[in-house]
Image (cartoon, rainbow over all chains, first blue to last red; front, side, top):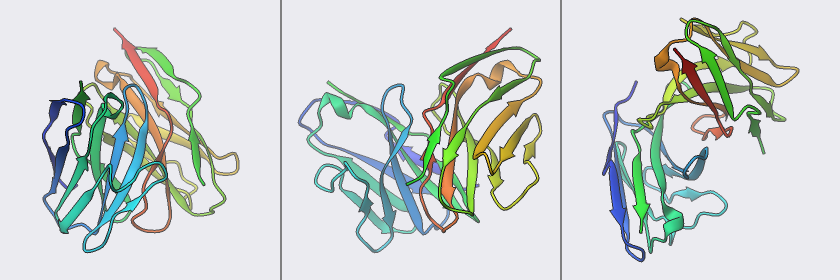
Length: 113
Length: 115
């Protein structure tokens, strides 16, 4: 399976600031997915990132708050902008590897104070 | 839209015993995939087992097996010979048959293993 790394693994940020999370994959993949996992909750899809095009956001998530970049087939970033304590969550990226299985990065634990 | 329901927020099992985690889903699609993921305290999501809806045979991976009932839209996970390392959150997930589509997760079941 693909090896996926995320940076940072955790961070503590002040409200009003922004954090960019990086996701690196050791192979080329068409689609990358960004999920949020709020404390004690399940995973919720934020957006789908396809290389060379704008990310597709789920209901309740907007580009101004969660801008995503996908500059190539092995890398993506998710920025959490103008953070508030409600943004405290684990953020995970995932990729699909043939033919239909999805594998996840180790996650980024974000705490907003 | 598809939904996944896990009705057991918490379960416990004695070491070496067998436990079954329940999952039901709702979909109008005829072809799809179902998964069980394990999330230990390290928070890494680990794929445990997968099932293609077009296969009647239940998937098995070592001590993990599923009971897939397509008509009932049920997809339970059985863990045999439970080990302390099995303690984790378990998430049931659905994926449409179309390629590169995201997963829809249930709320999860926290499994405790008692020594």
